[in-house]
Image (spheres, rainbow, N blue to C red):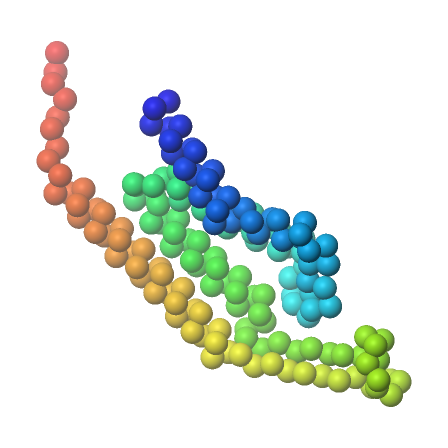
Length: 158
């Protein structure tokens, strides 16, 4: 109990700090997404699932703090963030179509199409995520090397 309780409390606090406020966004902003929400390939429902996945990862990382599993979970979280970022942004190219029904003064039957290409910015975010994976991998190697250097004292036999 003395070992587990501080870990659980730490995991709950860090889980709320790092990911719990994401669930408060739809409560604070009833029109979460608003007029721009339809342009993203992610609905509010799937946003909640993605936020829940990151929250579970954060709690699990804090529960396994001080073990090698912490670094593996951190690498998995970075990999999932890379995949989700590419999927949500449609590979860095987003197309917005504005129609007269959106309240714009356009002739009937016409539409205004905007295409935003931010693949370079997405590439920079992906490079930072890959650096995060590399950092966690190096920290795991450092953790294992420190554990290998610790003396092992076998328990006494009765």
